[in-house]
Amino acid sequence: MPEFIGGLPLHPLVVHFVVVLLVIASLGALLTALWPAVRRRYGWLVFAVSAVGTVLVLVATSSGEDLANRVGTNPLVQAHEALANLMIWWSLGLTIVVGALMVVHSRAERRTTAKVAVGSAGTEDVEEQQGKAPALVMIVLAVLTVGLAVGNGIHIYRVGDAGARAVWEGVQNLPPQNGG
Image (tube, rainbow, N blue to C red):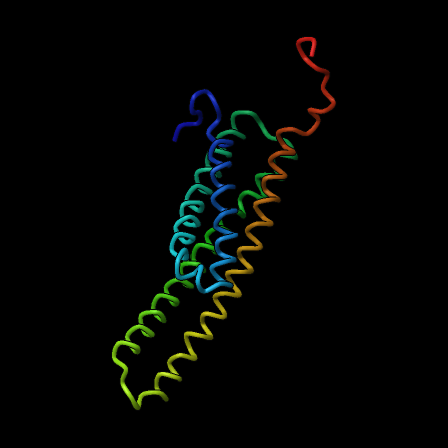
């Protein structure tokens, strides 16, 4: 993997994609978990955005390690790195739970569509019992999705804040250059 693109370190370029995608995925996951109409229409898109963001977390982590090896490390960089190393677990968790939510939702939708199409009488008891298990699973997955989406958003902020401090801490105390 290249360390630089167009003379710029790969890490800050990829990190901005990660932030945008995972914030969108987190907000989308909240809406998907809480609003069935959004789930029906955009749930798989939210899953895809989360999955791409998760893959890019790996690229950001690797390119961040390359950058740290090149520029050296200090306590601020170490704090950023420690938080960043946890990001994969937050994003992977969100991706898995949104995927599970969508699989259960899709199966429930297919079952409902099949029942309406068949219109069979006398199977209410069986259908009612079958409907309770997926409903309970959907509730559990929705709660997990909300928790991971909120946690993801908070952790993205913490990693980004630590990274910004590592880059910009003390810059306000530097004298202007070039007669600035």
